[in-house]
Image (cartoon, rainbow, N blue to C red; front, side, top):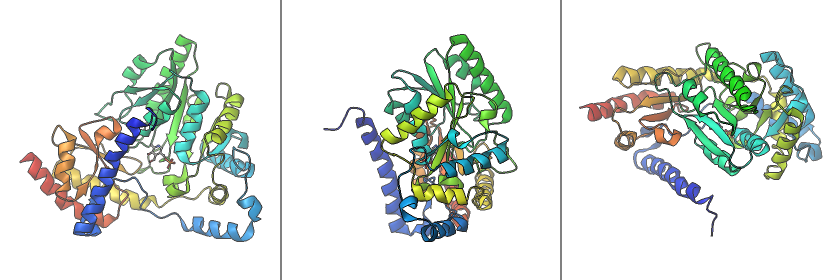
Length: 395
Ligand code: PLP
């Protein structure tokens, strides 16, 4: 008999499976090239060649018992030092190896941070639309997820409602920029205002509120968009980073958490998060991948390919009449459903072999997410199908 806590997750999982099976069914029926599957956020750009070379060189050069062995639960110290120096060069920060904990991707990073800070009943604020897994991560530690409703004009965080939702129980706020599912990059002005609200509320309640910056898409920014480094705006910031998208390594499960010295109770927090890495069963981040990252620390994925897709899909869809905020980052477009119920839109789209994710999967009904990490041909060939779909729905 499974636990009560797992039951809703098991039920919800069947929805994801249905979607996956639908994609497989359509591809078998019509051929993969005739199915426009915009449902998955799996990078379409391969990892840079330097990653492949680093793997081969490491396997050939390094002592196997070290390369594949256990290390500190926080990860190899030299790897953390290399990443800290890279961050300091790029963002003018002053991190040392001790401020970083290597993690099993961003998912694990968020989990160890929440495990380290949450008592049962503590509240964690998120801005809709948001990556729905946040709810599961918060519930893992018996926290309570509090949602701020979306500002559908800009998809920047709704700071008025945010201020109203902060209580004496608020322990953390999770932000994600560049953003899944909208592709929006939070502006510096937004970050300054958000930090000001947090400072004011910390004073008002005499509490500590951590700002958790979930950054798997940091490197995917277009049109010269600047993604502010949040530790510079608010002391109690914790950063969760991942190489899943920035180096196209989602299956390798590698990322890190930064807990700066300025964060309240920093030393104890670093120790707690490191122990959380151990006791949640991860123990440490994959050793080979840690060393690969150290060798490829300043490598970038080919964002030109994503940018080309972004422009083609945005221009194609808005040219037809679809409405959507122009994304500046990540690899998603969040499109307003042309009919009030986006489930109806998704169902109608399947007739044209188009697969997309309903906005309710991100706590924002009335919209759909298109992941444009697909081939350029898929985008170009999908546009006439979208046009037919739009005509069908709009008459
Ligand atoms: N946070 C957001 C916003 C994401 O979109 C994802 C993955 O898609 C994650 C976290 C988890 O990333 P990782 O593969 O690094 O665990």
